[in-house]
Length: 102
Image: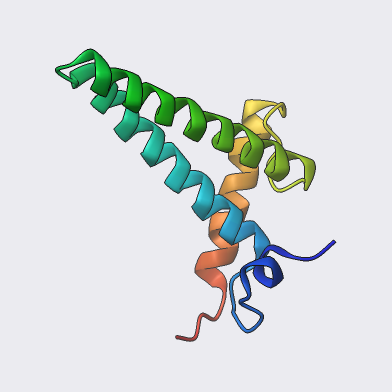
């Protein structure tokens, strides 16, 4: 199976597939929030329907991306909360301790 970078045509990058997937998931979350607010605030039924349809599509994409991330083992959503917190702390410490060159 090809990596996300290969599919996108970005073979020379420092970003990992996990980073790309997490960033895409964050973007989908922001899009869903925006469409939800737009749906709730729309003045006409036609606008509400259009925004609602877009919201449904974005939620579907978010779900598929979440499943991909879980299937790859990049996230463990059913893990004990204390273990998830400890894992996040360790990952944060690794990032802070790494040599990052720009």
